[in-house]
Image 1: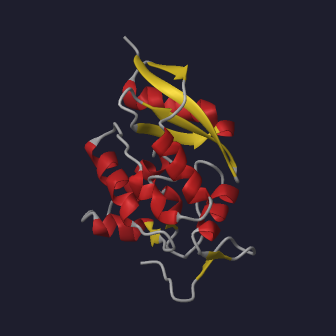
Image 2: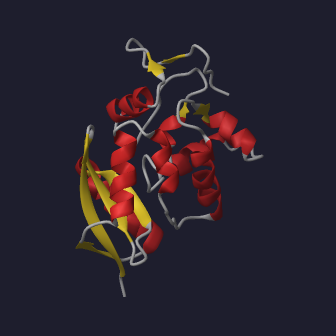
Length: 184
């Protein structure tokens, strides 16, 4: 039997967010309307057969996300979520919310924090298959040189999210400019 999830759409300043929740109201996926096929593919990879039913996400979830997009960055911590994936993917995904808003971390630094310093590529791959964009802030991971690298929702969204969180992003080479914030 397919896994049944609910699908809702939430307008944001950077496009319509797709919110996938389970019967308990927990967020299972957050992606962008223009990347819906990729989101569905990730859901199949993590859950097998999935049936998405149009239904409104819980009010608390919608309110927290709306608050985040209006500038209350701490609202993401209120969102309850659940992910399926390999133990390593889950380790990476659970580490992402520990990177505070207004800061970034390189893939290598996250690998080191997870005590697998040679697993930079594996961290990058797990980050790239993160099913819950924004809430599990994969946009806060950057290249070792401070450059913006890969974001499933597109680099323009990554740039917007980082600026929204107070990170200055240079236009020229897509590099982060730091005053008091430096990548680890």
